[in-house]
Image (cartoon, rainbow, N blue to C red; front, side, top):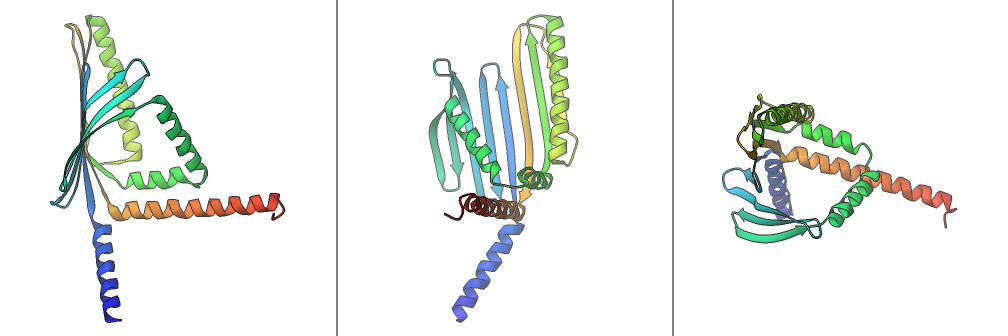
Length: 222
C-alpha cells in the first residue's frame, strides 16, 4: 500500500512538472528563387531538443505532387527520410479534418482560446522581389507590403505578440528575383495543450453520444 502511494505521488509530481513546463518553438523559413528551406526547432528545458529540417521542396510537374526531403534530429539521434505529398492525399486529409470538426462542438472557440495563450516574439519577415522592370517591381513590392500587413493583423488576432514584428520589403530593379526570410519564436505551456485536448475529447464524446441517441430514436431503438 505504501508503494502504491509513493508511485501515485511520483506520478502527480511528474504530471505537475510537465504541466507547468514550457515548450519553445523556433521557426525559420527561407525562400530564394527556386530553393526553399524550412527548419523548426523544439526545445523543453536544456536537454530535450528536437529539430526538423526540410531543406528541399520539389514540385513534380507530371503528377503535380510535392517531394520533400526531411532531416530529423533529436537527443536520440538523427534520421533522414523522403516524402511525397499528392493532391489526392491533401484532399483526403481535408475531408478527414472536416469530418472530425462535425464531432466537436465549438472547436474553433477552443482552438482560438489556446492560440491566444501562445506567446509569439522575434517575428522577422524580410522579402525582396524583382520583375525585371522598375515600375513592375515597385508595384509588386507594394502588393507584398499590403499582404504582409494583413498577415500580421491576422497573426495578432489569433496569437499574443509580445513585440512588434520586424518587416521589410525591398524591390529589386535588376532582373527577376524572389526572396523571403521568415523567423519567429513560439512558446506555450504543456498544461494549456493538455486542457485543450481534454476539452476536444469531451466535446467529441458528447457529440458522439448525442448522435447515437438520435440514431436510436430514429430507428425505434432497433
